Length: 283
Ligand code: HEC
Ligand code: HEC
Image (cartoon, rainbow, N blue to C red; front, side, top):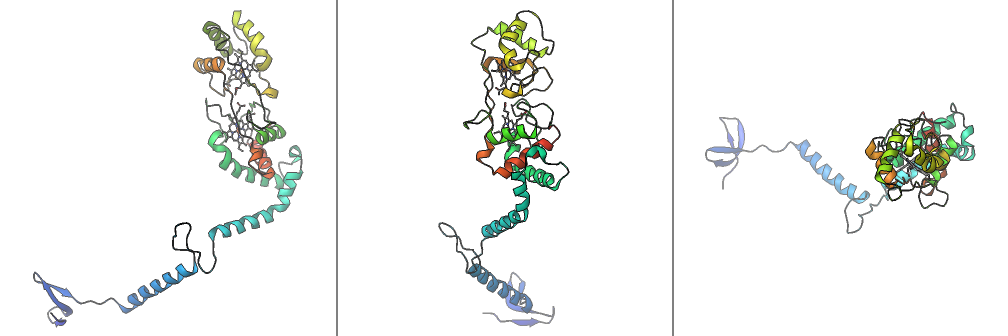
């Protein structure tokens, strides 16, 4: 046993322990520090009693105050909806085409629609709505519309989607010509399509007029009623190089979009349609 003693040389207390000639000093924690430390322990125990804290097998202790961050969020949402109730009612009760782009309602719809777009649409159409090149996800910023670019046409596309199970879905189906034409005929058609709106002459012109013009138009200008793209412009859904066009003609494509009316509220469908229409390419 060794005892605390005062070391006159250094002017400090030591515990009396020495290890290999090193002395262990006795420097107690400052009182204020110690009390703060005890206070945090007491506060911590109180917190775990008051608030949800200890993990259990399913869930956690609830805490005597009954606090839940989820309930707080739900309350915030209800409050937010209540604040906007008048605008939401106006949004769902007004003809889309008649909404003045300078109005508060339009501003609200664009803000709300932008949030919906970022959450629901950007994974396919890109965060800036520029589409995903050559993957069949169209650019929604430009003036080229597969199914029409008025706000009502956009809203229909969004609500019912494209080539899905919804009975009101937009629908059309380009045939796969791989079994119908020889590879030479397909190669001729590819050249013909790349040369549109003039096209090339010869057999390809005849094949095009007989098989393709009914959907894509005589000059390849497209037909929005059936979602047949303009194939005479420089905008391609699946790519304009020979390989991509050969693939389209041989196997067809069949691009699918979900029916958002089944998943989103009426207000959200309308808001996101107004948002898309406002991006610049709206007709
Ligand atoms: C799973 C992928 C996917 C998601 C998510 C998606 N889309 Fe689409 N969308 C497509 C595809 C594919 C097409 C083109 C289909 C075709 O070939 O006709 C399309 C087409 C469209 C068109 C028609 C464009 C035109 O030129 O006529 C609009 C408008 C549109 N989407 C809006 C939206 C909105 C708004 C959302 C979010 C609520 C959304 N999309 C979410 C895949 C998606
Ligand atoms: C029944 C209507 C229909 C017929 C007939 C048809 N197409 Fe299509 N075509 C479409 C549709 C709809 C698309 C959009 C792609 C999809 O199916 O999702 C398309 C897409 C294309 C594309 C891709 C365009 C792009 O932007 O990437 C090319 C190229 C094309 N067709 C060429 C042809 C040629 C050549 C023929 C004739 C041999 C033909 N199509 C016949 C409806 C048709």
